[in-house]
Image (cartoon, rainbow, N blue to C red; front, side, top):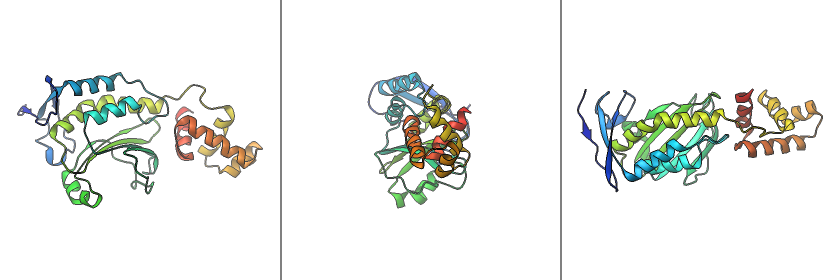
Length: 250
């Protein structure tokens, strides 16, 4: 069965609930104590409250995650920087939110889809982190019904994450994944007008603004206006992300 371990660094509050988190062999880097070993986590009142809030969050169409879920996650896993983003199957970033806000760089995040699951590689962080001012880094990703990957990441600049942080992420990972997929699946009823949907359908098929204008007998300015309105309603920032919403509901 393995050795039961009480994880230190539980933070402030009263530790009045004990939870065993059993690992399943995923990559936990230098903090791993062996596949299958349970880690006993003491959940103080503040952590319990954050988990309850996370479990109570309802999906919001067009959002990566609702704001209460983002707040709960940053409370559960203390970090200096937090981010959530969505990429397509080629590794191209469709949208991203960072706290604190950071100017997006190259939208081609990687060659191919982002990895999914909970990932912490101590050796990679030690090798590559100092160049970016990062002391430790955790990421957790999920496939969505639209064929994209939504990934959350947590950074610390001066201290390491503890086993407790990884154990809590492993514990809430299933609920977090269900919420991410539900947000990607649900579309607001009647969100787009018929004209906006026609434009996005053509864009999803690879048409340029000029092609769409010619097909629908409107001006290019009108096409751009429909796209801008659709972006705003869907909570996206580019035509690729908006087209994915149309494909997901077609």
